[in-house]
Amino acid sequence: MKIRTIEQLSDILAEDLAWRKKELSEVKSLIELKDISEQKHKLFLRSGICILYAHWEGFVKLASNSYLEFVRMQKLSYDQLASNFVALAMKEKLKETKDTNKPSLYIPVCDFFLFELNKKSNLPKEAISTASNLSSEMLKEIMSILGLNFADYSTKSKLIDEKLLKSRNEIAHGNYLLIDREEYLELHIEIINLLNIFKNQVENACLQEKYKRY
Image 1: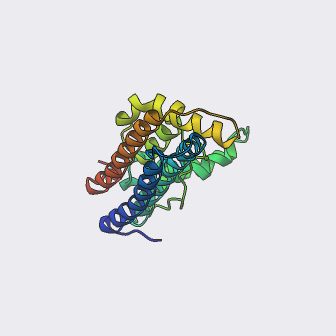
Image 2 (image 1 turned 120 degrees about the horizontal axis):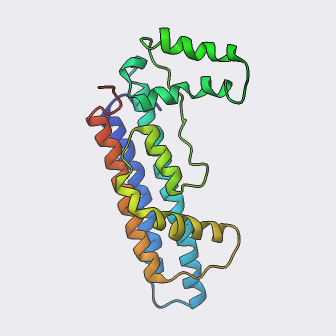
């Protein structure tokens, strides 16, 4: 879908986050039930971790690629773009020069910087990947590519990597993992908050035109 305006982007993010929050709220309600067997309770907790992670990864990926699509559709020249987006555009050219001893492969790269910066940019579509493993380091990389500030997440690395991602991986790989109800409820609140922060950062980046070079 082509995203040309901030309003379109905001609508997409709001709609996507709304259904995710609704589903997570339903899961939370099941986990908070007290008149169920211990076996069901453990099942809900384990399922809850997997669904919570899925929405964490899913929204970050969608919001990131939606922002990228918005920047693509502004049709700016390379010299109007912030350096992080120029780097993203150069990714394919730089791939060709990786692990090579042929200086000739660097010529197109040099030509780009010498003669093509004033041309209309051609950013890749759907270029942001979480590699199905959205750790704090992967998040930091994504935010660097998008020119967003990682500071709000820097104190949450342990929560993301151990309480969410590691737990999800243990469950997804078929290992038994005992999860405490209160621990899950706390994690639920934290991840919802991080999703809200990410949404706001993307919208603010558009409003403040942080994708442009100044």
